Length: 326
Image (cartoon, rainbow, N blue to C red; front, side):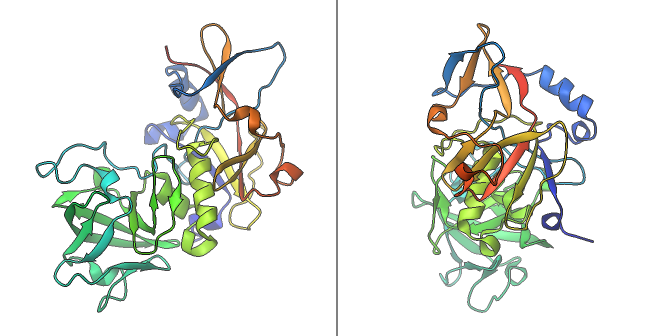
């Protein structure tokens, strides 16, 4: 049985599991929604016959593929737990993790959590751990389940006795941290936990684990998945978007589909060049909504295009028309 990272990837971000099965259902769901335009977007009058280059909105998958998400880490909406100590998944971005009884550091090597006397993630199940957050809070952490999936262990994690991910979902630890601009900060002493509905974990699922292909490729994947064109942490995306993610590394191949067209090529800092928007977002006056950096992005129509020479990944999408939210 091949792993997901061995297969060509067509991604869709599903609102519900049943919505992934039929394109008509997907279209109907989109027809009931509008696009929440970011505050720094630019609106421009559309010209007849013009197909604007555009922003990409992340995706997810059909039942036989994987699913990417709008958020970096996924998980529940942050809410106060344990008298305000654990404030949500964001607390687990860039934590220092140690064995609670001895302060021995827990590190990540080739997708495995390790500490002195604990050579694998599995050996840490049920062991009391302590995570120190970026603002100095100390949280009790425990791994309660571990599954080996593809390139890394997926784990169920509790913090202060509370399940971190929604609906019993699993997640993954990666090295370093991310800031509000979506930048990856490389620091081997820090770890970030992401649930499987967050793009950090999903990019690992697709074969772009940082310990396998490098941190830059994984970071480029998080930009692509969130349609973070400008590399400023602003996602131009909606759930339910079909995209085809591929690369020149031999990890994912381009999936032929007449309804999908080249959208953009990506690097760790955002889009390297663009061809079209994943969504054609228009307001009531017919103006197009575009990210603030759009004019600075060169045009390209394939990963082999000269303008994409520094790109690591690319995607194809359907350029779906949608109204901007009022």
